[in-house]
Image (cartoon, rainbow, N blue to C red):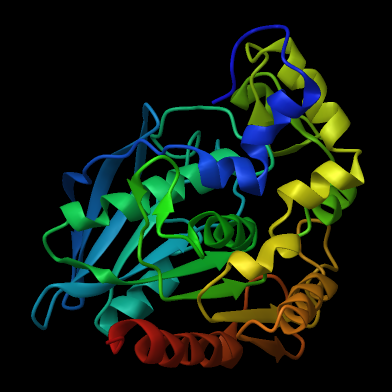
Amino acid sequence: MPATTATLTFSDAIHPYTIAGLRARKFQSGDVEVLGVLDQTADYTRYLIRYPSDGLDITGIMQIHAQGQPPYPVIVMNHGFFARTEYVAGDGTDRAAEFLNKHGYLTIAPDYRSWGQSDSGPSLFYSGLAIDVVNLLTAIPSIPEADASRVGIWGHSMGGGVTMKVLTIIGNNSSVGAGSPRPIVRAAVLYSTVSADQGDVLTRWGLGCFGSVVEGEGRADCNSSDVIPLDLPPALLDAYYVAANDPETLYAISPIYHLDLVTVPVQIHFGTRDGEETSGTPPEWSKKLYQAFLDADMPAKLFAYEGQRHSFIGDAWFRFMEETVRFFDDNVKNAP
């Protein structure tokens, strides 16, 4: 992503990871390849897939609606954080994907880089994960059963943060990067999302892990949602430290300060008891993002679920998913 010369200035090193830098980059995508059938039910067929993302192979799960007539509207589902040693493709999205399949949607859940069977690669401030999702969005036209003109995004926890970064990358312009086509996304749902202000994330969980993915997973002193390989240019490694403590740079990196770029309606769902555990996301983060949308005069709705924690259970989960389906039906499935 950045130049490899050791003479990189701080600005040159960190710019590719800012919202402006990500919007300016040329994305390298390709076709979605089906590797095999994992399951088949009355509602969907579940496939293991792979697609290219900037030279990396990214795996994931695709579930195709079993009834009706293709092409189907598509929901890209961004999972939250899981320890890589425990993660299995589809974790964090499988229950919601099945619910959406029953309502006529094709769902795709990318593993992201370094999760599942994907290749490993650098990701600073969720940038690598967002790049993998943008490349998936641009690959959707290669799926015969998918309607690439009717796409929504659903993101849980870390996946909500990835979703917000993606929306600012692809929004409000006719192309992504140097001639890359702009994916058509019509709506987004955020579920127990991490803060769209990177400073909040750093304050709660700390810096990403330097070194290998395996070493990062085993350490308690870093946030291994981002793992920064030590073979990156030294100037970039230094710049990451500086950027993480520099309010001006965090402003350039954080989606919450660039909501004028978001061109789709957004729903935000949170549990009032989320964040009581360290791994959870405080309700204040969802409220802060909603207020920022209001201040930017952008379409957003906020839903609170009394007594729910990071992952909803019981009737609250069904109410959340029913609201999600109504929202996607209005803005994705029935889009003109």
